Length: 222
Image (cartoon, rainbow, N blue to C red; front, side, top):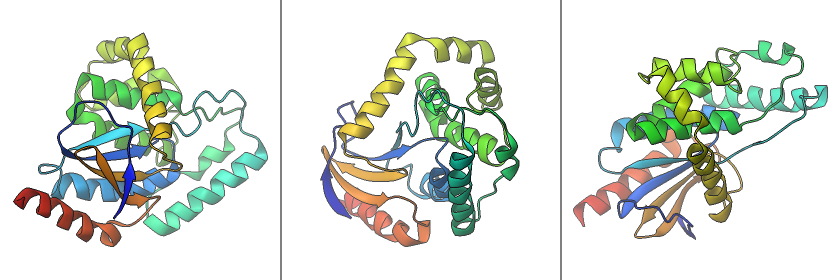
């Protein structure tokens, strides 16, 4: 794992993971099984803080046929590399605006209401978009997803619309840029303010898990 600087300034344990992702990033959906491994095997020893990177926040224009073709190619590559399910009927939609801000804000909302549910909310939004062809740019859809994670719908909607949630979401976007993250998923292992790169882009758990386990155990025995 290589060293890098990080702009993370929020109060965090001396050792933790920063996971930069976007719910509407197909490679992040492909990376989801690796996140499950991290949660099952190391999260008790090493907290995981998800940061929403903002893949296409604030997009206004509907997807063109050319854009559909490019994104479909990405989805096919991710499916083949990861085995994750995709519903390709998505590309039959007309007028879809690929704005990732609402989905990112939904995950930040979950983080503000119950930080322990953040990763599960991220996964649920990803599954809804990629495997179930649901419109995760729609606030009502995002609220329904939150309810499946045990959030009260009215409370979630209020928090989602709160200006502080919008500000925190944009803060995630800023942190991603300030940390030099140029693609998703990106996973950094942080110790006393210094970060090591675990993975830049998609990798299978088998390819980076052993090194991460070793780093975790070294810290635990220090």
